[in-house]
Length: 279
Ligand SMILES: Cc1cc2nc3c(=O)[nH]c(=O)nc-3n(C[C@H](O)[C@H](O)[C@H](O)COP(=O)(O)O)c2cc1C
Picture 1 (cartoon, helix red, strand yellow):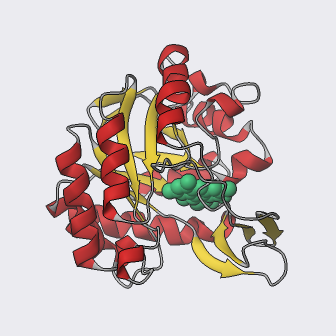
Picture 2 (cartoon, rainbow, N blue to C red):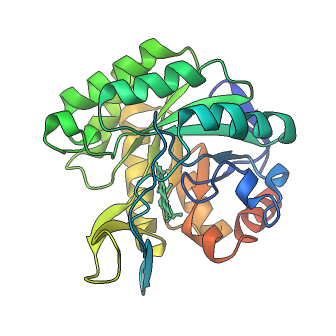
């Protein structure tokens, strides 16, 4: 598998680390050869630092994992001062995509505005699965008007490419991808986690399901979004092997991202990249 040209950049291979599972790259540098990958999607960045939810934050089950991290991150200022400069100087071949989160549209706009000129960023990934506190907690991506407003505000805030990340729990994910496209999104990531609970096993009670159970869900979402929008898609959810990655690529994904499988075994993303490059 050769290099991929998308989002105004060349990715040496299509394999990325998924948002929230590799910190800002730095945190995994001793266990993952980032320069062997297409790139890394950072954990969510919010305007202020967030402690996240109470532990335990992850629970395993037969179909994958449940996590309730609660967008823990050091906040915009520290990310701009420490983490992105590290990535800009240390990563020559791997691309950096910054995942952005918030509770109101202005949170996202602030992060995108203030990081827009940061060196070494290829794109922003807008996590549209966060609860919109000004719409009663319904997630931004669940309703066309709030998704349109979110993407519009982010589009006005930067000239860098925008990737919009959607939840698989939408009645019509392709229609929502189309809404994002109409407001200037350059690409779509599918899928985020699915809400779930295993009573007593997470500090927060409710978390997001990730891992193998998401594979067929993400592949179908990829196919539908590509068919409807023709936008580049980052396929994510349940990828553990090169064959899983190929299922997304065959469905039309331009890039793929690996999350949970790399938490269990950090050699997985590099192995997938190598195997894809051998056809
Ligand atoms: C521990 C953990 C933290 C995550 N944090 C984020 C995040 O900050 N922003 C985001 O958009 N997605 C986040 N995700 C979702 C992943 O990026 C990915 O969409 C999802 O886990 C499905 O991929 P996987 O099955 O390969 O893990 C997180 C997932 C996990 C497991």
